[in-house]
Image 1 (spheres, helix red, strand yellow):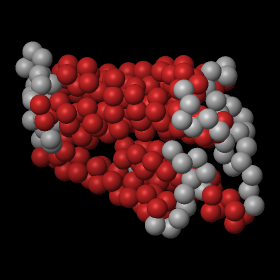
Image 2 (cartoon, one colour):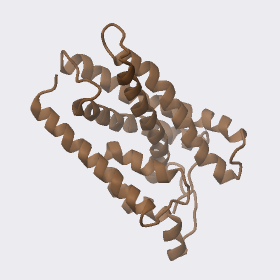
Image 3 (cartoon, one colour):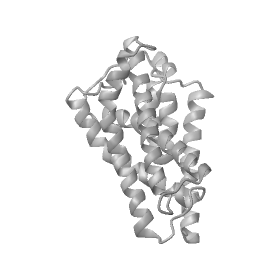
Image 4 (cartoon, one colour):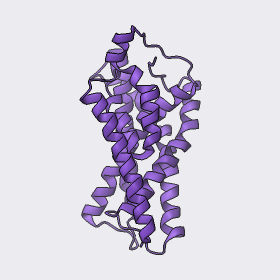
Length: 234
């Protein structure tokens, strides 16, 4: 089990993540700063759950400018900019990571609810369930980034492109997350924190940050080689 100081640190980190996500969600929903690309209304708050204040800074520094309201106020025009700019790559990583995070969170709670274990540990079931869910949500998020931009929402053609462009990105995100969780499970404590503990979710939060880092260069490569489409931004 995790020591008390780690539990306290976990609550602080998780609290910062939730607070950051709520601030962004409130700015989008309550203050009406809906994103030009609707999927980012969901992606930005989800990213804040694990990146916390970093995501909050990025949203108010750049992401908020992409809202329909702000663009109308300032007469801004959307453009796709340099494929490998830090912001373009980070945007690509954000909606990929948001889909992964949603799948991973759902998978963890399903494993907890079912009590599924392999060799007396939940790590194997977490991998087996989290990966397909993360892939499915990651592809779904990519689809809703591609299809509306092409005017092909509801059609199957963008789905194939989403699978082609985001599968490697999702896998690279999960490598960072899964690698960290395996290390945390076997190298930090003899008895890992249970799924319903703050310590477990703090470890997941760290893993998702590492996943964002491991998928960032992959997203840059995908954008540079035209495999992944750049997102419209300002």
